[in-house]
Amino acid sequence: MNTGKLDPARIPAHIAMVMDGNGRWAKEKGMPRVAGHNAGMQSLKEIVKRCSVLGVKHLTVYAFSTENWKRPQEEVGGIFKLLVLYINSELKELCENNVKVSVLGEIDRLPDEAVQKLQEALEATKDNDGMEFHIALNYGGRREILLSVQKLAKLAAEGKIDPESITEADLEAGLFTAGFPDPDLLIRTGGEKRLSNFLLWQGAYSELVFTDTWWPDFTPDCLEDAIIEYQSRDRRYGGLTAEKRGTK
Ligand code: FPP
Image 1: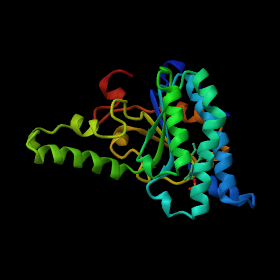
Image 2 (image 1 turned 45 degrees about the vertical axis):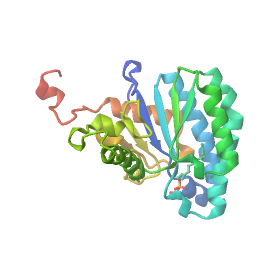
Image 3 (image 1 turned 90 degrees about the vertical axis):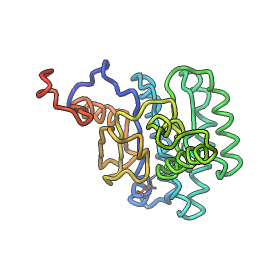
Image 4 (image 1 turned 135 degrees about the horizontal axis):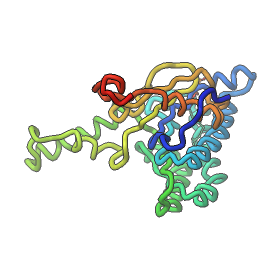
């Protein structure tokens, strides 16, 4: 149950989620890990819908990291099968809700079927101008920064840019997230309190909300609780508190 009251006028423009705890959810029930991811996919469906209804402009979810390849092949294959199932079952509704799908990460390494489905989703939703739903797949924050730096280094080596004049905006332009705002709120379910290589550059000033709830149990009400928590924070960006600024 929500304890406070959600202010509809201060919904975060960008929410990012680390959907952790699927495996432990399944283990507790004596089920295989993939069953946990399946339950996680059902959670994701509801969270995407609620974010869109609340007026969130960008939702980014960490579906598969560059480190997740270390998991058993059966589990890795299972996650990509779920991605295909997710798009099959949700694409029509995503379009009806004016949601635009995008992908963060190097998807060429994904199974062909998953790449094809993603391309179908990107194409079908490309003209939508409602919520942007970014799915991080084969994504790693360090790798993303490295790729951007490599592009800049190449331009510098070719004499096309002066290394001294490289700005934060130049580096940001080479990230997968180029053109959209940094996350205001980053939520991690499943009890761990770490970023696990997710949005390392973009999360510099994100408000972090950690919850012990396993992702498959994370309901739209839990999401609203996290937004209420976010709304209670005083975002200072290295400046003064609202009290010291005299605005409170
Ligand atoms: C982390 O939980 C979860 C993942 C690595 C996969 C997330 C996938 C989904 C939510 C479903 C698939 C949906 C799409 C769109 C691909 P964990 O397995 O690390 O949980 P644990 O820490 O309890 O083991």
